[in-house]
Length: 386
Image 1 (cartoon, rainbow, N blue to C red):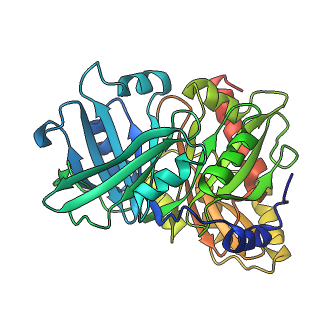
Image 2 (image 1 turned 90 degrees about the horizontal axis):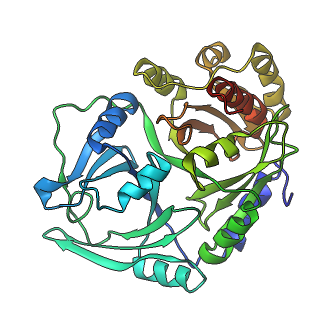
Image 3 (image 1 turned 180 degrees about the horizontal axis):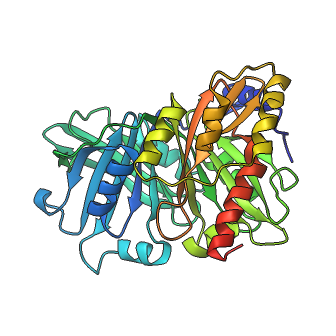
């Protein structure tokens, strides 16, 4: 293991001081899902997660092959896309993977430069730079493949003043449920196959100039039955973080193996979204029907004060309230964090969401791994996939 979990501050220093930032990323522009029924999926994300109607592209806007609904909550944008005929290649993606993430769009100042820099370093092209225009200006996009069939799309929108991008119109709806307090995408996790993690770590380092600032091996991420390994990649300014997981040998099948079996390739395992008030956010999500993994046992919460005292942190939230909601707590030198994970949000046990509130902590909840994976294993047991 290249760095242990207690050396987050070392890794962050390396990111900000040592990374060759030839690919400046301003943030996550949007995440696009290919889904079987975008209209119904949009209703789910509005009703359950509190997203708002934002933009639309379909037959009414001149799109004959696909329909897309864009949802927005604070800085998070989700695009849900469905094919309109059997000839669309999107059908192949849905048949193979089910509903899942196809595009992780990254906001850049210069999409052409981003494409040139990454392809000359070995990235496989998904889409050469394309300029789309309307009366509100222009958007430049270009894309490369990453693990599996997942795509990084570079989006340059500095010369655009319209709704989302050309080809879309404002989506007006009488039904816009109240926000649940989700703010922005904290990180996105990818699952890759046996022995592939280091290959993709090297790819992110060489192709995109990322740094591996945290590593976890199967001695740290394991239960009685299963194990996995993970490395966290971050870009030069620290705004984009992509942990990468691969399976490890265990007595039974790990959650990563289950994902790979049902998604049928590497892909995005979960999207972590940040909130400033996780108790209120999770309470609202539960009331709207979002299902979360089972609550850790009593012993877990009894150990929390000692873990916080190790770093001289004091919990501001009511631990009984956190326990009643199943929210987990972890700490590092900089502070603590609160996190909870949904069950898969589609029928295949693949993509899920993490809700996270950072109270100074820079890590990813390493102290919660055992309790989290035991909760996942309880779900795998019910599905007969452990």
